[in-house]
Image 1 (spheres, rainbow, N blue to C red):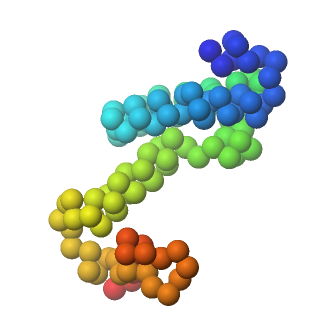
Image 2: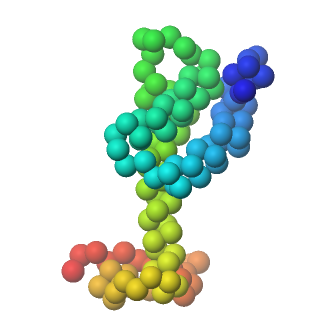
Image 3: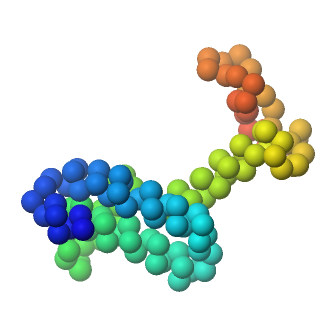
Length: 126
């Protein structure tokens, strides 16, 4: 849809449309589906790689899509999904929704601007 309807638009408009229209669905489906096999991860990543080609209007087979993703500053969907999982785990741990002993993992942040009761510094070195 983006490729067909936004053919003559600049790359940044196409990238914004991808982030607004496609990426939320891709992230949600990847979270629900949670692909763990190499093939499953490749299917999800292929959608983003195709979107990078559309955004930059570069369909040459000799071009490196990894460089396109870097130019667009788009992290891999699998990396975004992993960050979301870690954030959710931290949230559930801080609110005691799941019982994980955190005394040796987290210590409250103190003495910095913007710190509050739910701010933590990592103390993984035990």
